[in-house]
Length: 171
Image (cartoon, rainbow, N blue to C red; front, side):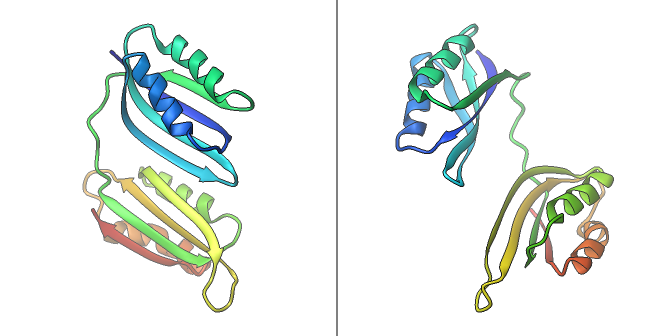
């Protein structure tokens, strides 16, 4: 068995996950981990799988056939599966939406060698005012010895400048 990551995006429809899972199983593969989401009418995902040697081409063809149309599908070989790593901090950001929030925050984290493991973000209407409100949750891995106070010192200037509420919690 070899490890692969499948990425895909296309128009949302009922049964997409069932179709993909069925093809992985039909070829003797195993669905290991995934992140799937519907965004702006598109269904997108990342799936980590084990597949028998040499079946990735057949899987790509089968997925393209069953999904059809304007679906983008990519299957990439990986090294040996690494054990799941838990993020050691969670960052929560909430504040008025504006351009550049993700770029500023991710740039600050990269400057201190922090890796973003998972990020979820959305813009919604704020209660009462209806103004656009940005929300994000990030699970991160930090270099050894980095604590929440160091993370706060790195992010607080950006949070203050962009009027974001910032919460940093150990995991």
